Amino acid sequence: MSPTEIKTALIAKARSLGFDDCRIAPALPAAHRELFEQWIAEGKYGDMAWMARNTERRTDPRIVLPGAQSVIVLALNYFQGHPSHSSHPSYQIARYAWNDDYHDLIEKKLRELDDFLISHGGAQKRYVDTGPVLERDFASEAGLGWGGKSTMQIHRKLGTWFFLADILTTLDLPADTPAKDMCGKCTRCIDACPTQAITAPQRMDARRCISYLTIESKGSIPLEFRHAIGDRIYGCDACLDACPWNRHAQESREAAFQARETVFSKSLRDFLSLTDDTFRALFAKSPIKRIKRPAFLRNVCVALGNTGAPDDLPALEAAATDPHPLIAEHAAWAIAEIRQRHGGVDQQPCSNIAVPIVSRI
Image (cartoon, rainbow, N blue to C red; front, side, top):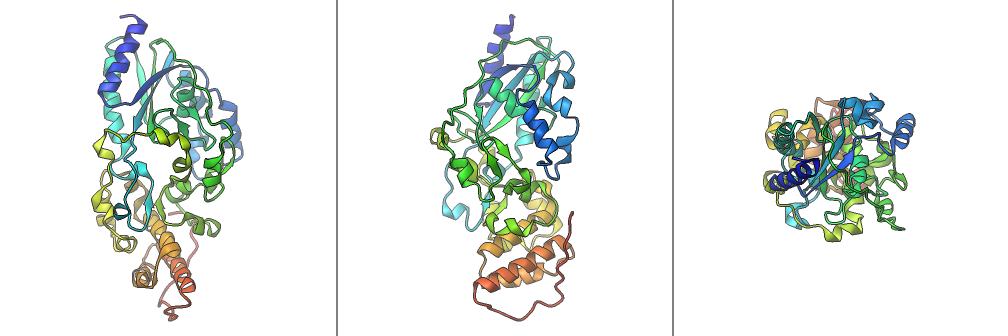
């Protein structure tokens, strides 16, 4: 088969596996490598130390895979429509984490594409945001959307609600035309960010981002950001929700992304009774599982501090005596916030509550 025929068959195979788009970029250094290197130099990656390692590999696929000729970029829609109040009673979880971990689901699909490429003489490396690839740069170069002002990838048909995956291959496949930036003068994503983490168009300070603070950061959430977190307990979709290109978004065909009823049937204070074992069981196969119970309950306590009522105090008082200092600290903060908001209700101090300040789990 000719390279063009292989590409045509590859796209058909990707579609049959459930991918919503498949494009090709040349395996050249990333177009925005200097901006990435500047971002690293300014320390805006926070605790994500892996981002600062091997920057040369991350910006040049030919170092990752010697002989690489092409980068295959794939998109998988995860949009599940607009949630009803009943399915999200008193808190928000980023849409991508409503159910099963996308890494596992997409990796299975990539293995089938890898087998197809091997059969045509290619050697590959495949990634679902798990390797040293600036995937959004290559997506833009492949014509699979463009980098929005929020730094999120935007697709003309999918909006912002899709996962990206990459396959580096030694096959020299015909490249697609790079995408044009279609954001225009719109700044809705910048305006919507609760913590002003988008410091300028296409400039993100991860240390201020709610997704970073509730997922990647393993320590105490800075006081200056706790109120802005609102009712979010895992991630944040504020900049994605604000994007007008989402008017074109269609619901995903993938049932594994639907909201998990066993999670969303719970109230915020219900989560505080989770043990390590029940936490792992509740979030089995979920991306939430990887942050572990202490960080998750830290997030729950912050949300309760922002939205909770006096009837949440007993659960928080129990959490404030948790052996893990991260949970105890944030529970004590939430108790003080609820009491202040409700006019000093239940002024009796919680017994044996310590409020240690911790930097890491």
